[in-house]
Length: 475
Image 1 (tube, rainbow, N blue to C red):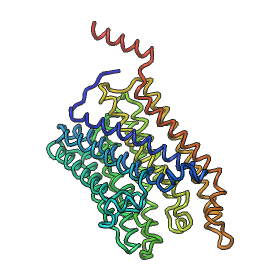
Image 2: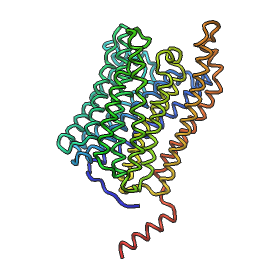
Image 3: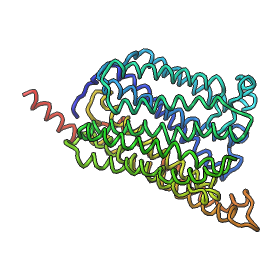
Image 4: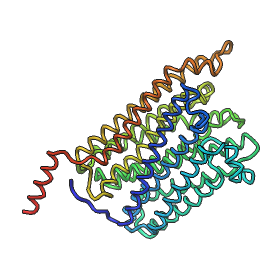
């Protein structure tokens, strides 16, 4: 293993964020498996952890750990791209502990206090913002997120302004600022249900199918620049093309959420056409990743990071692109909306597009943060095994949910007469739900394998080779 030093000392703050993100990721998966079991054992952990609370914890942990991963990635990437130290490392460290404490307090609030009591105690009567899916956070937590996000953006933006400007940092800043601005709609909770759902989708859709795609593109481009050595001009052209398509299709593709919530009928055409085009930028990312790897000018020692990056492009296309397209046209969505097909798409899209890109950055950056260019071959083998175990586990889950969704639509939604009731339908899906739990357990095993990879040293042969190389250099 070659030793490596950070180009800029302030990049070391990213390590805190990466460790925190992985810890929260493990918590998210544990609660996900709990939810899967509660579909089968309805009173599991009741009344201590009812289904609605477990679901809130699962989805909120997903959001928090991904945001923490994005922040850590930015703190590592931006100084290197801007060729200058981070504007304020102390602010970055303080924000980590504030964000972690606020997230932990919110999760404990969900678990220990009835949700209605939590809402009353945190000022929801003053400004009603709670109760919406993914945006269940109490008002103080939402305000804290805004403060942390603005301080983080100030720190990152000032670093970019005082240093070199690159396409990667500009795209990343666009995505991060867009993420923060869209979150402000979570404070708007109108009494009109149609407007309420519109503003809710402004946050949820324009995050995951808009601004987050810019962040993903920038992070993926950074990892590929570092691991392939391909000229920046080539990568920049690809990046600009991808984000243009992502923004055009993503913004107008919001219409696929407006089909049946009371908005004008033309949204069925706009939403269907442009959301059908949303797989294009993800397919372009797949071509981009493979093209860069084929054009590589050197074999980077961290092949595990290359695998995570290429896997991100492929799985992102399958989850966000193909599985999204399956049910995005309004005549199909009429039957599938809110079914287990939606859950299949959501799980694979988040894993492929965002989980894998954060892990790709962590896989590339953590060895350098620990003083070496790459992990040992043995440790990388563990990482690669973890990729395949997690990906196969996710595939099992997604195929099970897809099968459950198709059967759900067939039994419950398509028949005009004699349609089966919701709970009776759920009884017919139990086989798929057991398969889903098996996939979730496999995914957790893959994640623990990934975590273990950071504690795996070189094998005996590799140790001897390293010692021999060191002796030759000394001689």
